Length: 301
Image 1: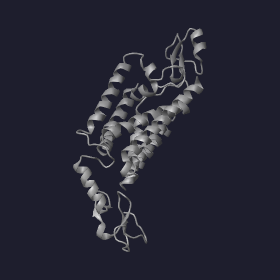
Image 2: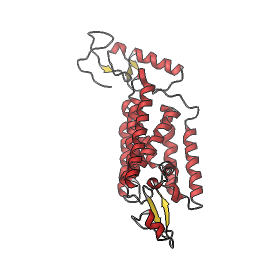
Image 3: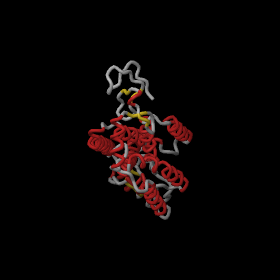
Image 4: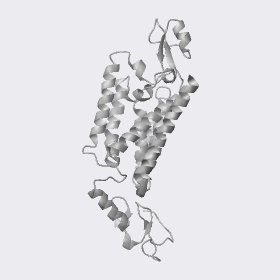
């Protein structure tokens, strides 16, 4: 409930407003207050919400998923399948994100030469594993679905199973996947810019942080228990700091920022032009993210 001070009801001139509508944020008097799931809404927004419910439209323009868990289960299956393939061969070297590339010692595959360039690596008879800037552009996507350690996979997939369906119930499948994908790419962009160019990063954590960022924005907008989301995020940040050097905090940061921006674009798009604004905003965020990746690749190349 938001206090409005001396503001007057937009439907009854001269009548003091006690609260604002949680949907359109216009001041309303006690006679216009209609109980909603969170706070109060004005009669117009209540009728609009009823129409959207009858039409099967979610609060932010999406369509309800028949089973909100299905998308997350499919993502979990893809990640698990990739882990099974990676655990039985060396393909993981080509799926993880390496900004520039890695020169692996020919006589010891577990060792590599930091800072080595491709030409020198090949000339010395060692093995060059390409990175994004040296042609392995797919790594910005495949790294989001790649895990080397089973515990890493388990933690991320359990988190996705609990977080994913919650967000999909509110956004619908298309918007949920948009947030997940953009956050994953943004995590890759942050890795490109903020990590050593010859180190490898893997994992879905950037995308998961993006989902938590979107949930934080949506919870704040609906005046829900957003402080609980902040506590969970804070705990994850503290965990990152405790294991600094072994966890890709860069991917977490990039994914979180993208999730916050994507969540804001979806939640605060004006209702009368909601689909267009959401499409343009999410497209612009994707383009900026890809441009950041390309720019860093050119600098490293």
